[in-house]
Length: 313
Image (cartoon, rainbow, N blue to C red; front, side):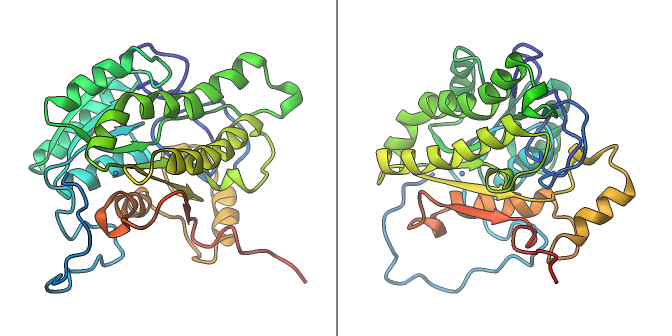
């Protein structure tokens, strides 16, 4: 779906951010200085005899079990970055995936790659801010079955301080980053309630940390955390809702950022490196899976320790 203004149904987030943290799917952003950020079967309770311990993820983001077999997942902002990695991860673990994005050509490439690997996926070029476009997304999902997972990654980010940001830019970013999630949740809610589904919202470390030039982006990402808690309370226990907060993740949002700025950002992490979209996708898959059946209304920071590392005498 269109992660914001710009292309109509047929293209997803276009504006790209030049800072570290807009990292979700395809983005809408204006150039600026770097910043850090660059969801089957219903759960039926604990098995009294869980059997052998499943193989564990090695830390590479590679799926190790088909946790989503029989489920349908909708992934917004799925044409690139974290959205694309999430679509691939869920499909590799058995889900039928509906990829939505305004970047149709890139979205088709993501779907083609999933199919080439033996997965099931379809692209619905659509705009997350268009309520009617969600009808197409749900119809496509129902060609596979009821929606059990919603992964919301579409975003927009325009770089400008508050006093220089136009009202149109402010409203556009909130429409993509926040209203689009509201519309998507409403569109798939009936399925989620009927099948004890899961929702994972992609917020950002910007929700907690001020970085110059991103007032609307930060405000909308902070609002997602409040919405996460509200939806978890309103629709639990039938629906679980959680959020991830990525930090410096190496996505196309970093294209054009110089080596000096990249090195400075890496130095600010405890991990000493950028994260990968696959690592965030692994966190999203965990929160959407039955292993996280007692986790709802909360958020998981995936930032390599960027949020906790501080330089001080």
